[in-house]
Image 1: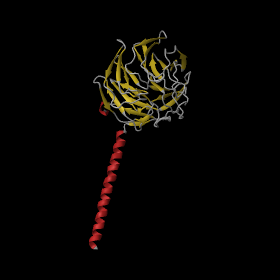
Image 2: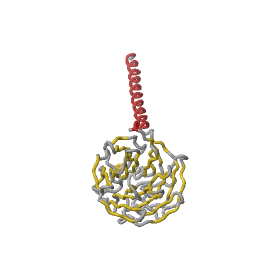
Image 3: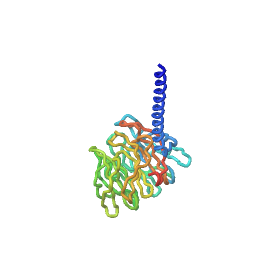
Image 4: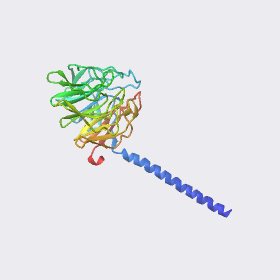
Length: 333
């Protein structure tokens, strides 16, 4: 009996020790996950939660244009709302609405004006050819000549006095490259992108335009194709580590940062953040977003990456106003 009494406490002690060790391991794993996401800092929420919005940086301010504010899926209406974020004060301010409500537009800055191109009036395949220009100094809008083809989910890249619009969606993803001359308000057709797609990212670095990721109805694309505007030719680079669509991205130095998205259109949301070194033609992983997010908007100011809005829910998407920032450094790779 005495032996049994001695054995029971020993068993209880061992059980307690194993339990404590397991709990310690769980805490360590939890801490590891927190540390992995620790470099993403939460900022003031955007006043109007939205997804599939356009974004740009002008004079160290972030401007967000349009997007979808409803959560009913197909048919959810676009907004005309424009809001400006100041990193210096961590605050938002409303600006004058767009002339036309739009979601899925593309936005770029050219000669102190902000161009908003294409898009759709709601969450359906109903593309627009509209081109509207915003003057952030006077807070006014003007209309310009429509695109040759109505498109949504396009990307636009200013280079050498012109704006290059690439890919997007008419019915399915397309390969169109159309170039706008703001001075003459005219359009010109260029060589198609090799891989048709929508919901992609495109950015210019050292005179070359990199078109990354996206999707068609046949599936998600991991391709990276590079356009040379001077020669009007395309070449291929190393594919993404994690092929994704409905992504966002920005450039810091010679690196392109791709943020969030989904592995399948509207499904399997991703928190992945990856950097493409355009000189070495290699991909590297960065700190994941704290939560998987799709149809978000991303912009860089200096070495800081801002991830704005989007949805943390699979289709039908639900808009969020989340704003997070990550400070990029070479040792963060």
